[in-house]
Image (cartoon, rainbow, N blue to C red; front, side):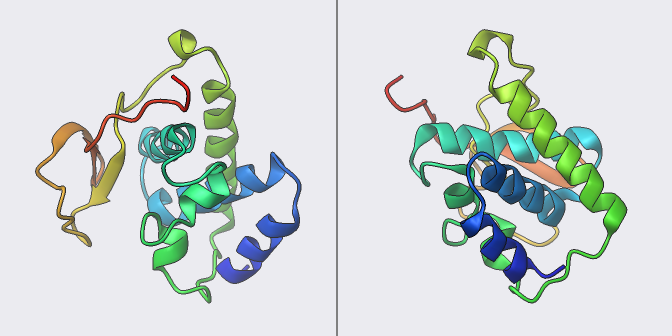
Amino acid sequence: MKLAWILWLAHVLPQPAADSLCLSTTVYLEARDQTPLGQLAVAEVALRRRDSGLWGNNLCQVVTARKQFAPTIVSPQTRLSNADAWADAVTVALESERNWALPRAQRKLVVPGASHFAAHAIASPSWRNAYQVATIGDHTFYKVQSLRPRGG
């Protein structure tokens, strides 16, 4: 299936199904070749950003914010053709959303405080000298800014 079709579908699905689809797509595009821990870390960054409200009010807005995550960086014609990786991404996204729905003190955090990440083989962001939270696989996770939940 093509990315353009998935993003269209996300616009017509009700919440929370749309957010689960957008998060699954992002995990697939950003981390399908990473370990489950690396995939959970990518999802955690997106969920933390959603809670901050700085990139949007829902996961679809966050992951499609201009030049923030793969859904706006790769071609809309990109095919998500690895069925096993897609199934894994969906599992990770749903698990991450369940974890994030817990009270803050009960969440299992993979990259505490991380607001950004980069795969340095393909990106050299201006904020790459920020505080490094962790490196998992070929992704480094950073605390570029302190993100607080809206109203928190």
